[in-house]
Length: 209
Ligand SMILES: Nc1nc2c(c(=O)[nH]1)N[C@H]1C(S)=C(S)[C@@H](COP(=O)(O)O)O[C@H]1N2
Ligand SMILES: [Mo]
Image 1 (cartoon, rainbow, N blue to C red):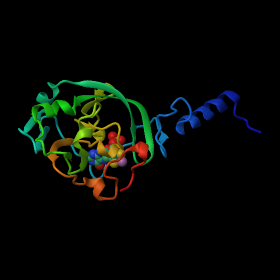
Image 2: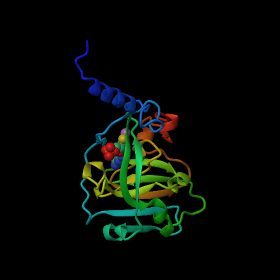
Image 3: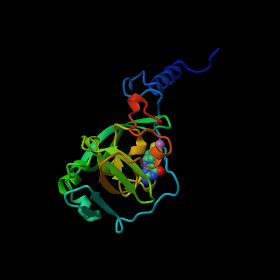
Image 4: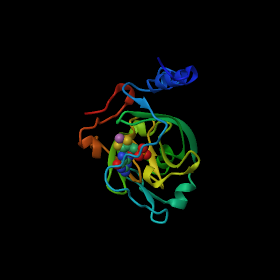
């Protein structure tokens, strides 16, 4: 016989249904993922320490004109705030996370890609890299985020600023981002060289290459 009171039992069943994506979160949890209300930190290697004084962001490679922003210059760019679900390949998903940042398309306006460019290799302080298709980098929602839930982005989550690519697994959302290199061809980034999928769509479970 269960000693759990019936209301607690219902709450537990609801939470379990949510974690499977069958409750209120139905249709929002990709296959093989579970919901978390925490915000786990996943970093390979040491956590870089980047002051806003030293911070720079470059767009370079196959562009008509290279551009570099310092922190005040970056903050002067047009900003957006969006609420999105995020999905980590280690099988957690988190719903309704709110981010503020500069849409990637705003950076491209000042550093237009050359016609032959078709991918972007993303560089970070600390050496992490990841690769993206240029057409997907232009999609709404792709931003260099510097605020999370209305607060400055914490260092462990990529502060001062990180890339956010909500529709792909979170390893594409490079923390402590320092540069976008426009390239032709699709050079694998750090995790892509270590067996992760070249694309990383959570709905197609593109986990491993
Ligand atoms: N520079 C850098 N960016 C990174 C990583 C990293 O190790 N270094 N890890 C990636 C991985 S695998 C994930 S799942 C997310 C985790 O972001 P979080 O620590 O804010 O949850 O950051 C991604 N961006
Ligand atoms: Mo990850």
